[in-house]
Image (cartoon, rainbow, N blue to C red; front, top):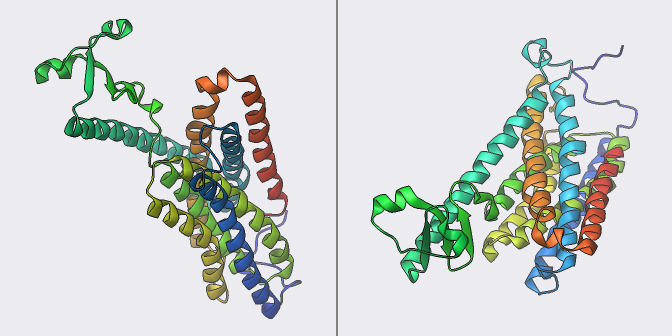
Length: 343
């Protein structure tokens, strides 16, 4: 059984430092352009009214993006995390005695659920506050049965309100069974959470390419990572375009996504002379970050993208849209999964 050489990071058969440096510069340009193009398409489409959020095309693009994100978490990131945290260069105790990658990913997904719930709950309270400050168009339905008859009651004293509120309607735009149906309100911050998962992994893959001296490793990675960043950018851009974010916030998120992997390549190139990707510290950092990213991306894909759209009334009542979106979902997942052959 072959053992990992914990001192040498790669074979010297294809090593050529000068040619590798040139390829890294090409990789920075190619990945920057592809990532920027991917995230710009949905953002510009929304800005120029070319991609309406109520159109079937937009639903299909979100389904494709969900498939891409799901495959990124399951096929690209989680296996990398498992490989790093089960590497034989790590101390047997505790790293090789427990499957930390899956455990950390699970905890990450659960913590994302908690953060998502708290953010949505905060949004509802904030919207209620704004409405009460502006025009007072807040109607509280007290008790459990009055809502079914469309009856409403004005606010009573604070004790009655605290005890009796079951449904809250704000200007006919927010409906909530308090504490139970918060998930009906789309969160404003879920694109930021999604970007955290994507960006942290982008740093890792950028560093991995940057520290390599092997032409055999770098050449296939340039094309694979360019497509990888394009698909991820398109997925993230679709989420950002749908969220209620200011233009500056959208631009900053797009900018940070586009430059993260090229910046990782640049940093990796700078430390390539002394960086050892098989050192215990490097393996633990890479494995933990990838595990956290995998948990975030899988949760976001399944809950905030797939469940939200595929269980919606519009999807249930439109057979044509169902077929289109399921096709787009599987196409996105399979397209991103196929890139794992090279990256």
